[in-house]
Image (cartoon, rainbow, N blue to C red; front, side, top):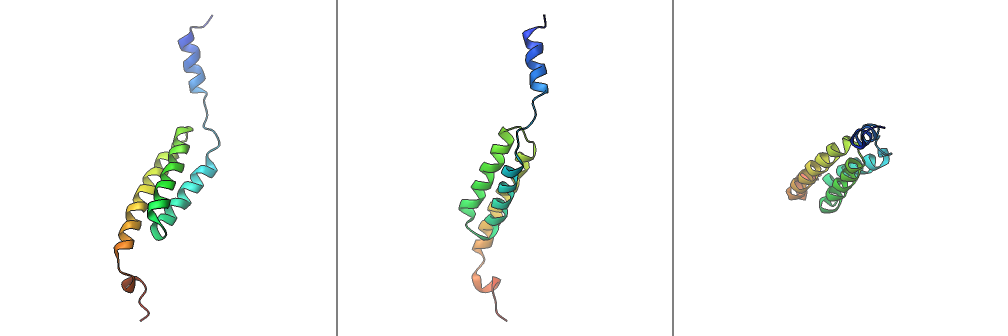
Length: 90
């Protein structure tokens, strides 16, 4: 009869990530929206979606968290630029 620790490690090795594709896509879309629209809302939302994917076993979830954090900072910087510089008519 196999040892219990061997059975546990074999079971963990066979563990595959749950379906996280849609969670990753929502995280990337939220991160991209954080640049131009409500960075305080969409930045953390993208981080939450990335963390959910990472907790389900997908390694790309960490990248989505980092992307959302970078887009949050970029969105805050874009909001600091006055509107007349960004949207000058001529």
